[in-house]
Amino acid sequence: MIVLDHLVYAVPDLKQGISFIEELLGLKVHPGGRHLHYGTHNALIRIGEESYFEIIAPDPTNPKNHPLWMGLTDIPSPGRITRWGIKHPLDDVVMKGLKSYNPELSVISEGLREKPDGRFLKWMLTPPAPFPLVESCPFFIDWAGSDHPSNQLPQDCQLKYLSVSSPRAQEINSFLDQIGLQFKIEPAKEHRIIADIECPKGIITLS
Image 1: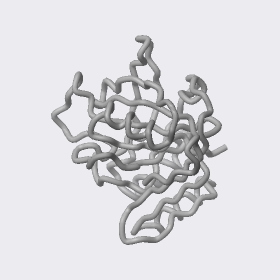
Image 2 (image 1 turned 30 degrees about the vertical axis):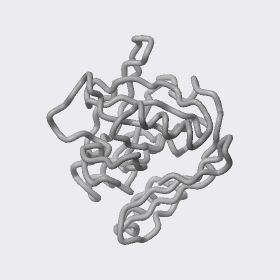
Image 3 (image 1 turned 120 degrees about the vertical axis):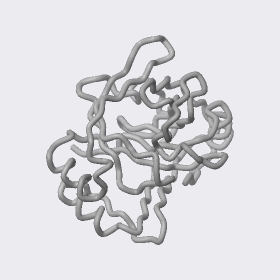
């Protein structure tokens, strides 16, 4: 089964980003941890069955000299949805599709996050590139038997609608059809990801 794994909301500063989202949605954001390989840290909200909304920012305790992934290098305040991830085995169809779209995305890496309690969460993924700011082609993640992060979070809100737009919509849709994903990218002049989230303050649109 192919499902949305998570949405990535990139912010310049994690503490400020958490405060903004908590005020906007009227709920508590939960600590995630530190991505030791990538120089970022995050916080999470559950938005569905094994899916979550990730707030991610540069980690000042683990600075990286190279451009940061997820569009974080020059992220404007208060933040933007810059990426979306799909839970799926990293098989030949996925890797060939990514290579055709952008060879930079067609690699497999190990993800590693240090949780607040000091334990580590590991997974395999096709790492999102630093640029562009927003990428409409999804990245892919395989938790390889690890407990999904959303399982430890309360169901405070729910993703009600997701729209992804791209100047390369036809190309991405052809790729998504090959892996059996019943989701269509909309043609547009710019890459954009929009989500409607039902929360204690109603249905809030984030992009």
